[in-house]
Length: 438
Image (cartoon, rainbow, N blue to C red; front, side, top):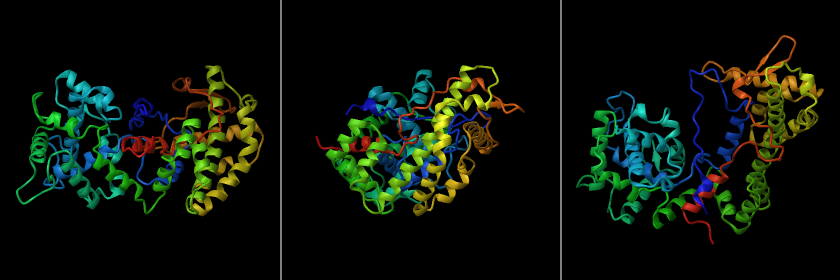
């Protein structure tokens, strides 16, 4: 399986000081994310390589002796963040770019290296607790018991023990004789990094090679991989095991290769799904049908507004768009179906509160007006102080798309999901861990 098929999905959030909000214009993401978390707890769409879970376990051991309130001289960076700087810089220094695909922060580390300056808070990711590898993988590490209360959990201790022995490092967890040499090497570096608020080792430091030799994203050890795979399949709260086991089965792999569609994959999974999983898949399917109708109509309206440039456009013009006609006709029935499917999941009231303004039948023109008002309200509610809508609206009800959004793509009209439900992440996990049988 080619690594290029799983390029990292790393996106920056809208800057807090900006009035622009270019993500989730209809507010459909939060409920989709809640359904995805219920389906495969801990897994996020940005995840690609499970070896970052091992890196988090190593980080927890390296940083174990620092006080809970320890921060760098910059006043904000915690020990785990300093460890992350070293690891990302180390992989950038010692590996080819193709061998570190999916490494958060690698572009920042490359820039710092090219400039000959240490990696630090001001030269790293704007929101490392969200977009760095700790931020991306920490919730899954907690779900698996690798981290518990900011310390190594039982699963983390077992993972670290297997990793250390397999890597020829011996017992790396704390012993009566003090930390293992590898841990001491990294701990000393983190200590200096805290004092200097940045990586503080020369290009000749042996520690840089440590990361590519022992924590390279694509080089999970065999025993380490078996343990991580078993941990992923242990899922008392969600359906991670069912999804993964079907995904790596001949039927699952064939379905994915033939369709590359989560809707098709979920439909195939449903045939063998447990009584607990089936209602969740039904809820996702219904919600995605609703979301696709809204998304296609909204996007096609944007394209029409963009085509007209700075010309004021009446909702009656938008009413002639086929996707708007279809949505205005089908949304009431779809709304009722979603309510029925989400009721057993205790998510129906949340859905109703978010989208009630779109539920009633009406003319295409009336429904288009309600869709754009819904968008305006969604933008207004975005933190911290609201975001601007993607269009200007005038007293006569006419619209002009704002210049920032004139390159918006039209709807796909392919019946596919609007949102992502972690199948690609799990497929890359399974590939890395050798779970897919040839």
